Length: 232
Image (cartoon, rainbow, N blue to C red):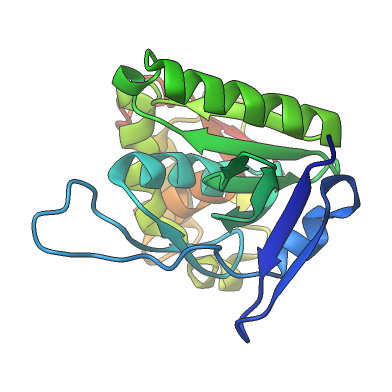
């Protein structure tokens, strides 16, 4: 049975077509299918997150969705993010996923965020299994996400505070000051940048980590002894 996909645009209009004909480019040009709402006593906390990937705000409907959004924004392979990107339906079924992620290699990942304690529900499992089949038939990947390593997520959340590209714009080629035969650590990088005349070396080191121009093991706590690799 043919599955359709619908997107909504900023002027309030919608467009529906067979899902195989719906492109990620069109989805990324649309607005979220649902408007976020808030009311006294609600269980989830929706909001807006400013994404360095999109250069605009992206909506989220819960803190768990925000966590997955942070990881997507940090992922250098992700070049496009759309929240509540489309409505898919066939007779008797309809579904709005949480995110569409477009990657640099042209692939697309649909993400459904669900708390782990809800995955045992037969109704939820059936809906997610159907969504997985539908998106696989379209040629898109499908991920059911319930959380990540707490330390890694804490590190990414911390680095997101340094995601403004304006912090790094005057510093083209600054990585040259960090190249040496010695093991480079966060503390050593700060010393090297200070010697090169950078006024706020810690801000720059953390901004370079967010931007993917430096790499570190984020599965452990970040400290002055954290080892870094220069990537550009």
